[in-house]
Length: 519
Image 1 (tube, rainbow, N blue to C red):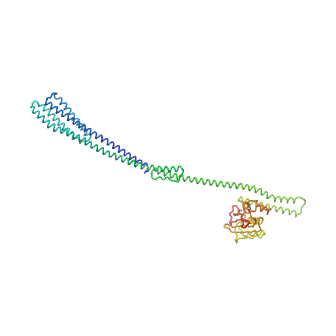
Image 2: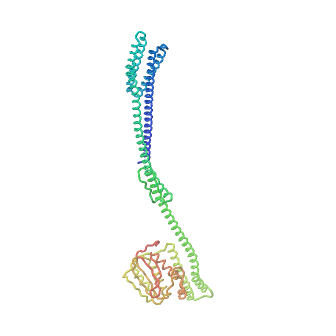
Image 3: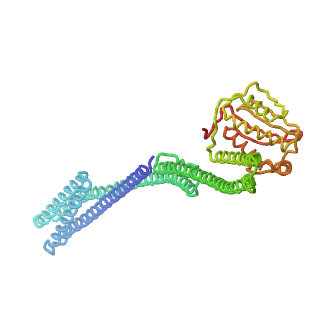
């Protein structure tokens, strides 16, 4: 039940109880006033009847005295008592009228009895007056006989009985009124007790309903609100019932769900932003490192190019100076000088071509002349050009692929020369099939390289201690060119230790290379 309806129900119930109690109080007060008035009127009537009897008896006594000793005041005493008696009757008639107005026609009997008493009194007055008036005519014995008859029959028997009946009637009325008042008091007390019990029951019911419908749900609601205030939105309030507090709890649960969802979304979004910022920072850091590396490589390249080009240019200049200095030379001497200058220029051209290819590869613009070829045939022809007895071990009959045959041949020659100049005396070439393509490896039984040297072997112009001691003509661009050509074909190049000693230099060539820039 909704709290408004519950409060309205209790308010209406308490209002009805209050109105009922007020009505009972008013009714009880009215009945008490009624009984008090009725008892008061009965007492007043009883007193007036007693006063009427007293005045009447005094009047009769006055008449008796007048008969016995004579009328000394000439009837003034009798006249005064007659006036009092008639006033008493008038007062009693007024009181009976008030009782009739108060209780109804049941008091008419008293009025009739009063009329008979009044008639009897008037008859007795007439008789007494007649006796007194005829006292001088009759004998005293007759007068006393008549007076005795009046006193015995009319007063002692009839009048006294009427007065007694009237007094008894008033006493009965007072008794009945008191009994009715007592019964009314008992009934009113019962109704009052009933209303008190009902009020207590309604109050207890209201307290029980207040505790069950308001206090307990409010306590549960406040616990949930405190949890929300502490940031714990994962525990719903779930107030039972269909009242306003349950609706507030449901609204708060919905709000908590929305806040939790939005908080989770904001948290995820913040995590994504942090992750994106971190990734972007890493990218920027890598770009910065790459830029710094590129700048260092550029400077190193300029220095290396300047260093590497100085020797052939010096040779060309020296041969030109020798040819031009002194007297005329023979044709053979000029020819020899030009041949040496040409060889130096060719070496310079190859050096520049290798550097240009590596730079284009690093810039993503390596140019390859792609065509369909067989790696097995290309490998056999290249090994044959080296004029050495180098065995080829292969587990494939044919190795078709798409690539630049000149650049791939350059890779194979560079690997063979590297093994011949820096390795041992036993050189083996292998061609293996891989899931992605093919693997060309040149193995030797030389001293090998350390891990640090293998890490730097693919840097431009790097020459290890073994290469510097055994082969002075190298430029340090062989392995960097090999890696650039392999990566330009979508493959890779690496160095690894040979089981049992030595070095393995290998390249991977895919069947269908995915090139970033080809021509």
